Length: 78
Ligand SMILES: [Zn+2]
Image (tube, rainbow, N blue to C red; front, side):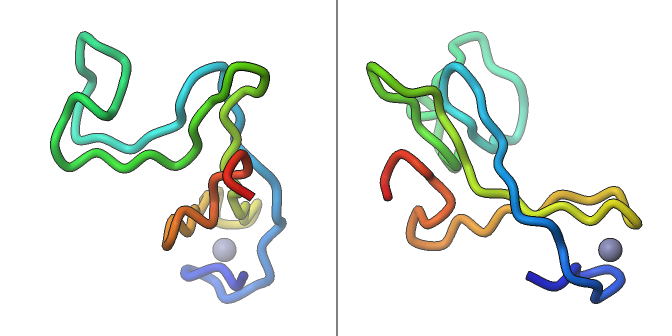
């Protein structure tokens, strides 16, 4: 993936967490995105695996990009 800021090739890696990785508008009391409208789950945990979402890094711009189209970033759904 090319960086949308500088157009250099980005490094592919992942963001991992013990529970779900999600985007939401603000921090809520219940840490599960499914309780709130408009949230996007990027990576979901399972009984045996931590949540992991593919992410691309640009060290020059200090940006991370996650493409969540069709849940393709969720490594537990592959
Ligand atoms: Zn960049």
